[in-house]
Length: 181
Image (cartoon, rainbow, N blue to C red; front, side):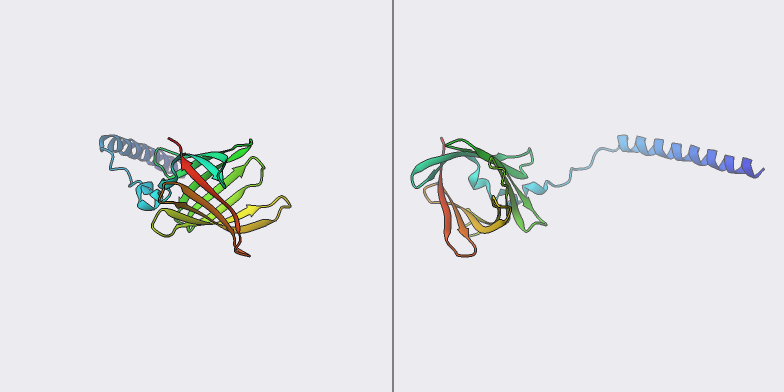
């Protein structure tokens, strides 16, 4: 008798559960979808690097050293992808993303040398057409090196790329990007 009572409970419970699932499925189909959640990437902080979008010719002391292209990575434009081609061969790819939990912009660079670089804590400085990052660069001996890396839109439309050693304050390199037509 106990077995029959348990079997009845299980059977009725399964029937009620199945009916409940079917009703919920019908309600879900009949209810028009609500508005999609706001696109986080439409916020102004995700537009802070828009000044580097496009294709650029890169030079060092007036001599062409590379070509670089920066473009949105997705339909939501949550980040930027970089393709860098050195004038003498080689190059690399990078990915910029704004991280609410990562203290601003993050960037991961994978060069043809196989020694990746992580740029972090990217924040706008100056008039909003400049970004400064902290670089943690992997060296050939397996150690790392820290620098400050700044991208600045100049009044003539060029981008100045400057890397400065955080230990001695010396300029490591200075490049200028000229927009391609």
